[in-house]
Image (cartoon, rainbow, N blue to C red; front, top):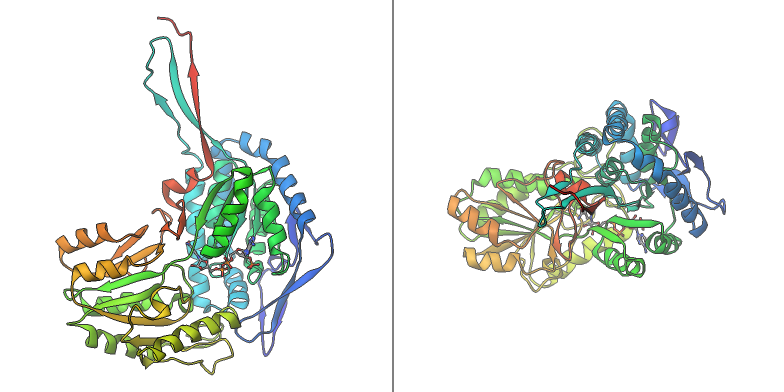
Length: 497
Ligand code: NAP
């Protein structure tokens, strides 16, 4: 299929992966209203495609389909579910070229990053296909001689899965793979700006043999999102909401789920500190800061939004980091060598601009960038600012763009205090070669994840998640499947000697 994207036309190897429909009870369908909404490429604002605009009635159909499929799905053995998830994993990797192209068209990220995300997404299908076989319970030493006690793990039930646009594939597999592995059916609501990565993944899950009703997908415009969200959060058949997105939306969803007491997993916003101590390997720190800050144009929840540099190496770090930042290639994600793609919307661009303008008006100095890039309306230059202080908006708010504010510090105690001065608690990083400091600082940082001498830390084998207003629960690792399981305690009496 040719997708006409302005002056560039791209061909998918498998045209059936580009679905512009919802998936309910094993079928690709329109919304009840037949209403649709358009999705545009953030690079050049051309139309990528249209999706059904669902409302409450479509949401109920998807939830009912999931609920009706539950008994049969949970009765399969973990090993049977594992085989299906493993097949899904293989299909994802076989179709990496098409999946990456679809992602770059709808999200704008450089094609190399899109391929990287598909591989990252596939780590979760790999890991949870194995974890499906390991939902162990316990035998509990009994407190009475004639009794035996144990606990078993059982699937929680229908899960509502709500995902953001910044990782359109990985946020789906990180939730759906453990849900399916645990024995739960799902209703997915992908971000309105990136639904086609989600529909392609659902098509592959269908081909892998996920039974009808077990995986459902509904799409919705910005106008209808509250109505659909309300139904997912209040419908009695939905037992769990797993959400990744902004703290404000997460907070609202938690409040809505309270009426039916649902279990929730919340992967919310971040405001990561990255600390470069005076004993760090400076070149390694520059490398780590580049990888951390500019992936997905800085639109990453675990991206550093405050870079604290010790006063002894501040100027040298600022110079090296600015030179590397200025050399990044800003362009349409489809171009060879693209490194910085567009921001997702004009309002994202405005937020980045407002953070930079506010900082500059309060004394920050722009070392490089600080302006829109001529690659297109939604492109912002990689930006490094020095003289940043806690009087500026950027010190407390998530920027979600390619802007690196550098803050000077003079002592370990001072920088830990500044780093923890945030309502967020997702990821933190630091560079140091002093083993005592490594333990002290890692333990003192109030963050769910800490990277030491590393700028990129996400993997399927480690628990990903935040504290404070960055969320509730963990994804990936052994903890990831537990989010979709309930523990049942069983006592057997009357066992005589
Ligand atoms: P968002 O605006 O909160 O949206 C996330 C998802 O929620 C989208 O699918 C969105 O739909 C949906 N949504 C919005 N309002 C809703 C409502 N009233 N009811 C139900 N669903 C609703 O966040 P975003 O801008 O897409 O993503 C960026 C944010 O996600 C950042 O704060 C980032 O830090 C965070 N994030 C966190 C993690 C993590 O693991 N902690 C990972 C990635 C991103 P529409 O798209 O249709 O509006």
